[in-house]
Length: 208
Image 1: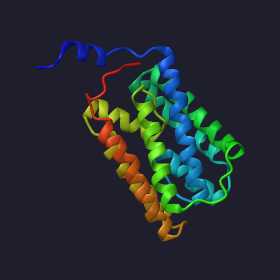
Image 2 (image 1 turned 90 degrees about the vertical axis):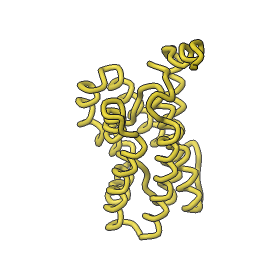
Image 3 (image 1 turned 180 degrees about the horizontal axis):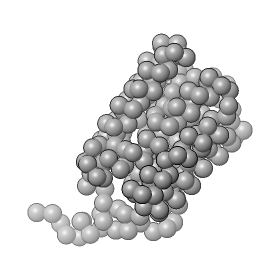
Image 4 (image 1 turned 120 degrees about the horizontal axis):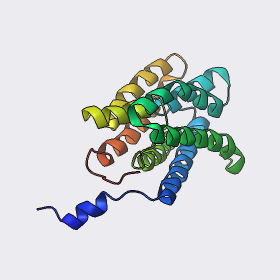
């Protein structure tokens, strides 16, 4: 029998400061993971992975590409997830773009082992996304689709993203060395495993 007090506590509405804290913490973790991936010339999940791929191909700053790639998806967020979710996602994308631009000035990474960068960076990004997801905030594009499909069709967000990531990494074969693509795949697996294990429907009942 489920303890009534436990259920009540687990479904409490988040306070504003809790949402703000989760957004700042989540986007900061993601931006640090991006910094590791950029230095090691690796790819990561979703729109961020596509933005990194385009950055490696064109030299355009990741933050600019990431912000621009997400713009077409806000209409889906508003129509399917509500304007509150869309606004939080817009702010989170802006924060990741800003933090990613500023991080190289805050932390200078001279060198990093690619395998360590993939595992540590994937873990940081996964934990950052988990914090955002639990406060009904995405990072645009694939995250919006992943959350929508999980809430409406019960499809695990982590498994959906893993499939999308596989397609992005397949495209990377035309630009990056095979070893970097394989290492990136290991990092993507760690990231999505964190989401698949910890972001199951009904497991976390807090609402924003």
